Length: 106
Image (tube, rainbow, N blue to C red):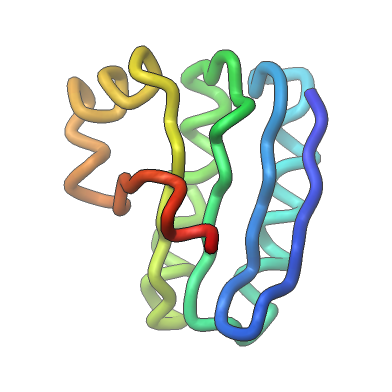
């Protein structure tokens, strides 16, 4: 798993590549906490190069959702692969976070 972040004018962007699972979930959790404290209006998660996300990976995002909501931030997943988007929708996660195409990253 590789991940990076970018700071934009109004958003903290987390860029994921590879597989998000229990082996790297804690690193992502740390980066997500930094995003929450960034004072940006949005957290964008760039998933264009995310091959797979396990329940532990999804759990990292969901466990931080109350803090994100408390700060009034938008939480957006951009460019999910079709299989990952389907998983989000089957678990009704699309009702908790925004799913969108990569145009949000522009």
